Length: 227
Image (tube, rainbow, N blue to C red; front, side, top):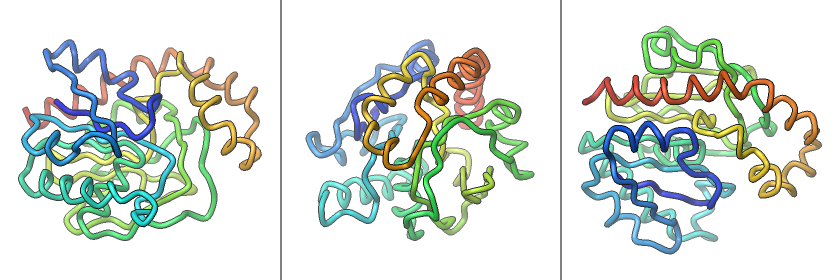
């Protein structure tokens, strides 16, 4: 399997252990450096991780064009593809949906509201568990997508295309034990957004046990849906 990484600490997080337990060999592909198209062309599973850039910034980050084309080919071929935050936005854009800045940043732990489809999906694993939101962009639903979850700030938090493609705007994979990497790596964004960093750290500690249990459950449910 291949993991497209846009930022070193925004990786598989809590999803790594259950994937390894299933016998997958994880190949890390760094966007902007490695050949994304070749890495995910026929991978049995591709995970596209998050990052601080916008899908619409291909003039600044030209590799996005190749990444979008490679994702489009995977999804159309029905190959298992999971998008996390920026990865979800890339899936939406690859399928023709607009991606654009939201009305405000959404940063911190919060619950999502599941749709009817969402309650019958793998997201049932996080129905009562806070997830980490860390985004300022949003997207319209691409054609054929089933909306799975919303929040008060962002109505499109998760969608699926059939059984093989799952796009999560939130960070279900985020490991609470590694939150300091996020707090340091996104220090400028946190300051500009007026986020209470000590409060976020405290909240992370409070939800840690629930998050550590829910994340592998979500991932395993999704995989069982298409294997």
